[in-house]
Image 1 (tube, rainbow, N blue to C red):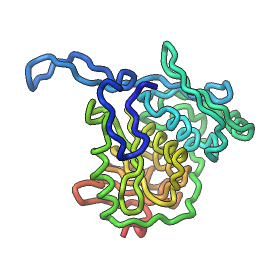
Image 2 (cartoon, helix red, strand yellow):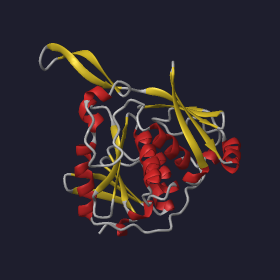
Image 3 (cartoon, rainbow, N blue to C red):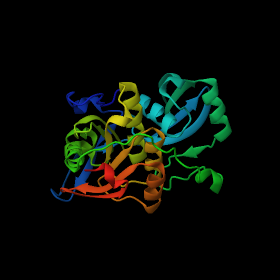
Image 4 (tube, rainbow, N blue to C red):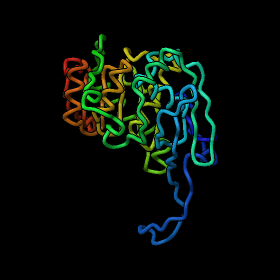
Length: 280
């Protein structure tokens, strides 16, 4: 799609002429200048995720890095267990949104059919489409590896994240998820209007780039919900650091999954809510 993308850090930010699918310039009255001027507004588009011809979910997302989004969503929602279970991804713009069609293995398709639930944009509650309490309470896998980092690395990664948030600088409306190595150097960043989508895009980008979730940690420009912790645990991420607060349920899920969860990582301070021994 003709959108501003950042496949790797160090790549130059794309210009405003590359944003027609991702953001719109609209005339807006600004009280600070008491005048009307063009302002960039972030796009929010229905994105249908289709597996072997079956529409499984329609998400509201920023139409950028949709191959990463589709792969990351498939992994974090346990539709596929490995990236190689997705044979190909085709993105097509329709009159009423975007369709991302994937071809997956027979075993993955069987899992999808067993747990299939139609849902629209899980941007708030995280439970839309769940049919029973038993389905909700399915535990996350317990992580085997033990990622360890210094507090300085946490803050180095979080402090550098705004430098790579092109869409947020332009519109003020995008969340970001970043992947850093153990020293806190950011290696990948993905943005989206939805915080869950940004994380899914990052997970997909990590798999496509060959980055191991056992050799770094994730930073978020949002609060940490239980669903984001669950997505991280399902895909092997052992340390999640958020600029804002976690929910109590997110903390319990992190404790059970063996994931280190840090919040309020800003201004040189942080709080570690689970498995604090991994932050030195």
